[in-house]
Length: 214
Image (cartoon, rainbow, N blue to C red):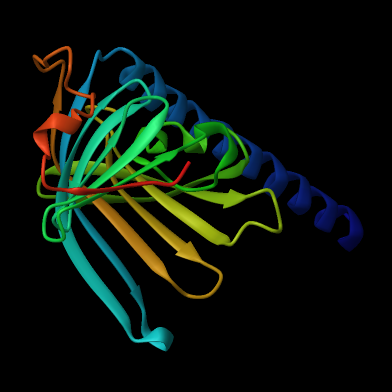
């Protein structure tokens, strides 16, 4: 067997294995998406950290978020952010200030809470990565690489609990070296929520300065 033919076979095996791993990764992500779509709402407690040694950046915080479809109420770093489907309300009790602005979920690259469980469905190359045992949970990592060369993200590692098909954590590395880690500490689904849970009620903040951006 010639060396050229051997090299061709090796290349063919590699390409086939890569394609199979990609399909396996995409299949697991599809299961995650299907599981999430089956819930009426979701409540999460999480830990969030961002670091970049070259910029002397190292921040860590905890928060919680309630999600229903694309609506959410997010609490983090003393700030409450409400998205009611049309407007974003950033409420800052420390300053007694509220900023209100329009937000188009379809035309932004920002990884909002509502996109946490859907952003990976398109625009990425999928790779089956390492498996870890974390406190008795089998976490399978999927590596995502953006297809758009202009994307500032270098790669994303998505950790998925194999048993529950829930996302355990997300590790995003940007091209400038910034690393963002989002870890879900508790996950609750189908909680009883009031019909006004995602509604901003201005009368609750009588002494706040309201800044309307549009």
